[in-house]
Image (cartoon, rainbow, N blue to C red; front, side, top):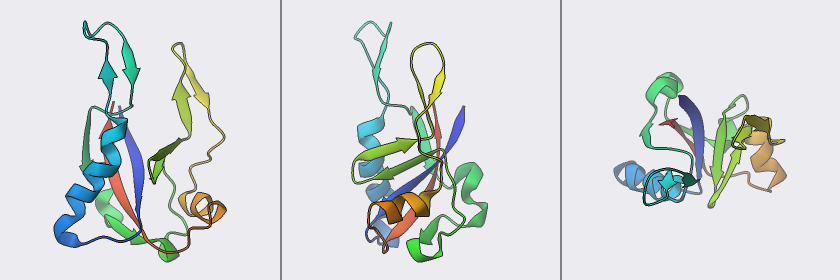
Length: 120
């Protein structure tokens, strides 16, 4: 399945955007036991900036992100997901997908959100 993710960056450069997003996404790459029988971490196996959700632009200043909603929001090494797989089914997490509201709750009012399409 494809999921809509927003990656928070305090600052960015167009030339280095891919590397910045890669660094933010990497801790959440799917990992498995050596025999590939069991998933032991992460939630993505492939991602691209924009993808299915890039039609509105891939980089949005936090100040302009009023209506940004997403399945996953990554901020400073923490992933906020609207739901998580518990081994049997998806369970709600308490994150409602409202990116700007979560940033405000954390006291973040500056920076940028980068739209990412990831697959798992």
